[in-house]
Image: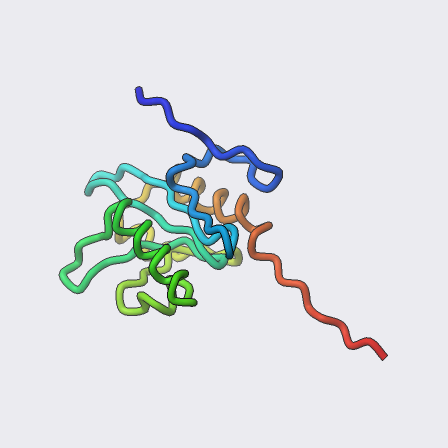
Length: 137
């Protein structure tokens, strides 16, 4: 079994492979990826902006880990999130509020994978907390 460097910080508690944890010097954390093996093949699931997702091209091919990392970096470099920049290829698997069971089933994720995806969304939630500005009188 290969050894991977894991992310250790004050924000996440789960094991995240460092090469799949995407940060920039100017924006900080911009996204993460976790890979899953399903009966229909490997799946690189992206996590960004309170969403778990796949990117699937017009031919039905799922972006690889490397392609997904590049898409996340590319969208951030251009000032967008993946959902906006890759809208035509974006397949939402779930968000902090609910999971998209139909999509998870369509892409062959089992119950263990589904639970892990939900737990990873929760683990990353501290990166997506928005603070509302209060009116000061």
